[in-house]
Image (cartoon, rainbow, N blue to C red; front, side, top):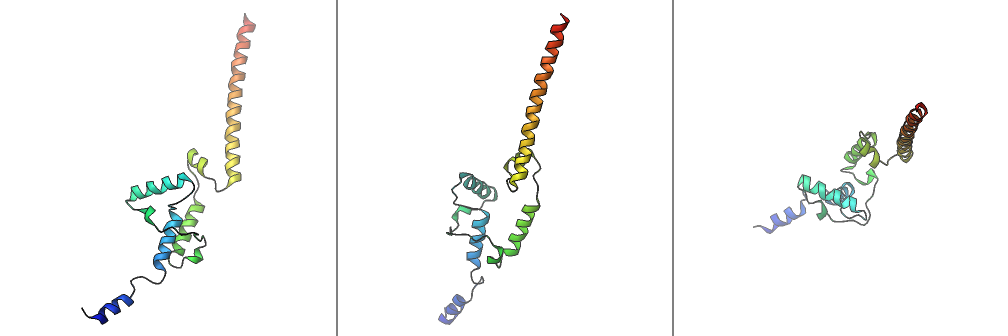
Amino acid sequence: MNICLVLTSVRTRTYPDHFLEEALQTMELLFPSTSTKPKHNKRTRRYGKEYEADLEALVVHDKVELSTSNYPVFGSRMAAIQSKYNDSRPRSLSQYWFDRRNRSEWAALWIAVLAFFIASVLGIISSVTSIVQVVVSER
């Protein structure tokens, strides 16, 4: 094999500069492999198993930047994912329980659910005591 051909192939790059680093940072941002919260590690393992991908094999960076301007290749796609996430609304009670994007809305919902539950229990107790009172007064 010609040495010039080898040197030329080494100099030609398949990917642009910093593309692979950006890809790793993007994967680390979307699927955090090392987290202090065990819930995140469990979720990452579940995604890896579901899509048959080894997401925990990523190189972990000390600090992952959250600004899309730091991601020239994947920034527009990450902005689209972020806008879809921000525009989505929970559809079930369990989704409302875990959705903490708007804390005041979350707290207001669960205070209303708690108030409804307490009002229902007190209404049942009131109805039962009224029935007992009517039965006792007719004797």
